[in-house]
Amino acid sequence: MFAVLKTGGKQYKVASGDILRVEKVTGNAGDTVQFNEILMVGGDKPTIGVPTVAGAAVQAEILEQGKGPKVINYVKRRRKHSSQRKKGHRQQITVLRVTDILAKGGDKSGVAAADNGTGFVPGAVEAKPVAKKPAAKKPAAKKAAPKKAAKAEAKPAAKKAAPKKKAPAKKAADK
Image (tube, rainbow, N blue to C red; front, side, top):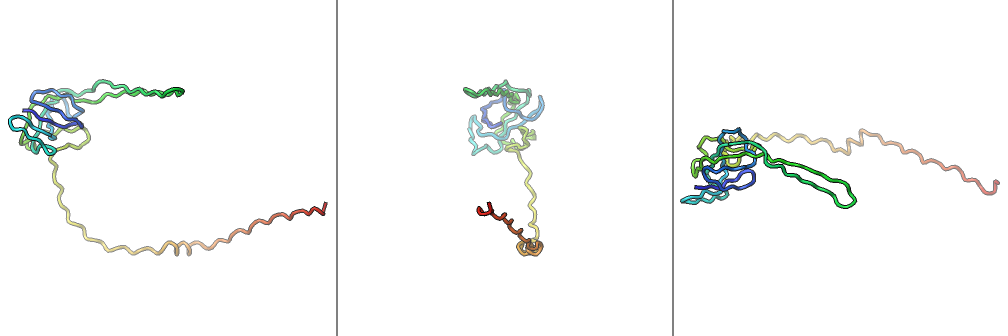
């Protein structure tokens, strides 16, 4: 039997006993995690999910937590510019060994769902919120006085400054 599971934005075709290198999944070496986002379960009776297979799960044991190979990004501007940038990145990875593929009953297995560190576990069973009664409507508050009237009362009319008088021009005859 095989299954196609989705984790870290990628899809993996797995069978029992396979070893996978996936993006980081929370947990320590030796812990068992369960992937609930199963897109397809194959075997004697293949089942294709719409978009996922309900109740299906893949259980795996964490073998190792580590980092992937270093990827270097080097950017250099052309011609008369002397700027350059070098960045390195090592992706956090988890090495897993698939222990079991469950076509049904994955939600009742009791194994912790795989979490990629965001706090969101796709396909995990969540408690339904209790329906709250709608609150009684409060009476509408009284409206404030119009703003224009308030401004007019608060500020007396300011006098405009008189324009400056120009000095009298000298007459040519005075010379």
